[in-house]
Length: 213
Image (tube, rainbow, N blue to C red; front, side, top):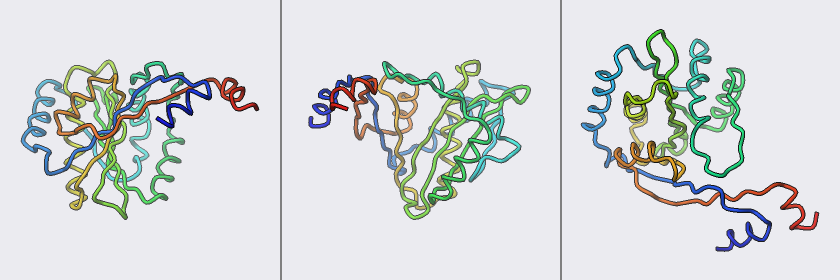
């Protein structure tokens, strides 16, 4: 209530609601994940996945960045934000920063017929707190949706991460409340709501006037 009052006082308005969800690894149904992977292989012939631990390999940088652009049409509701496509050099810088902070990234990239990028996902774990994983972006480009690739990516990437991180016990993720597609996948995987956050926004000039600057 205090934060809402502050945002209102500074002229901000509520633009989006975001859900933080968590799943205990013991609650994840491995048999279900296996059906997701098998179904995607059947429904999406000609597609395959590449997986790795750590920074994006140089040979896959362009494909990864192209696939990551799927996040540009993620629901924003009323948030004013111009998404920018990440370029290979920027991805390398981000990976260096991630490593320097003590995180290990586990990534899965889906490629389609003709080797065109189709989708991606990533999950990171801090080396000093390996019991908690943080699910990052998961996206499928519009031209490749409807084949179960999102589920395939999530299932395969979880398997990769859990195999490399035997102490992993909990995974946390964030999604807009207005993104039923990804929320449905997460709920089916076992994620349950943990917190809900309200995003407030206003032009800088509006806030500056409210604080007397």
